[in-house]
Length: 358
Image (cartoon, rainbow, N blue to C red):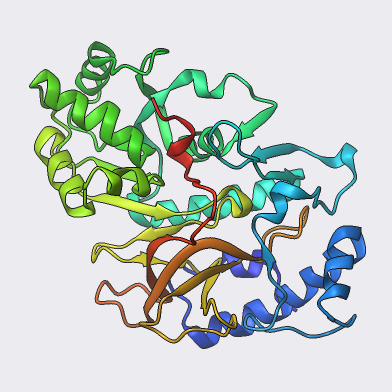
């Protein structure tokens, strides 16, 4: 049976459809049995769905949990004393948040996976890193929000790390300029959540009438497009104005969630979100949850062989999207590529950067 270490040896965007199926199907079957044995609520849910024990599954047939269940139930497959870290999903005031319990092994697997995916874009080794956020978001180390977890996860690729915002969420321009001067001539990695980058970096520089010399820098950002869409800011305008104030190129979006930390889908040079070798997606029809072919919109299902501490290996999200193709993107990356189109009606507004609305 293939295992995680075997999977991690695969190139981040190198598995074809057939190769991924051969690896994932037995891993997802094993995880379903493992969580059924160790998580009583999950076992009850499978029984309610009519799933028999010892059933072999494929990516298309493995039971999927609505991601909202992690807001309503304590879903974990480890005893309390084995909890290494708890990640909470983002949510505005008054909303319930998901609680994702990680043991040390699951956390390490997720970090290794994230490292493989991001290194494909930025290359090996650490880069001087500018985080478009405030250090204050990390002060509570016992309970990691999706925003804090994202910063900590991506900070693995930065050394040294500079926070661009002060404790009042204002652009600390002197600190940023000193950081860039110290690392002049080096490639700079920038990370932030989309709305934070837009409001507290791009717009702040425009209001000050200032530009920064970050030509050749790489920005990775994610979440918060709903807020920007409400302000009539398209991805194209977002990239163009960042290029104008800081010379940033490339600017890469990503799609990910607290419920499957580590398995992000990264934007390729063609502007498409790509599923890595270490996760998968299906687009499901709202009417009957059948699998949509390329071009047909539906609800995004995310699959990952990583979570052993909680039953998060097959989740039905509240996001809508369209599969654009598989193994044939002009960028040369293998695997599925897709676009996120929005949220299901009546779904709670969620997005990593939406946890801060100031």
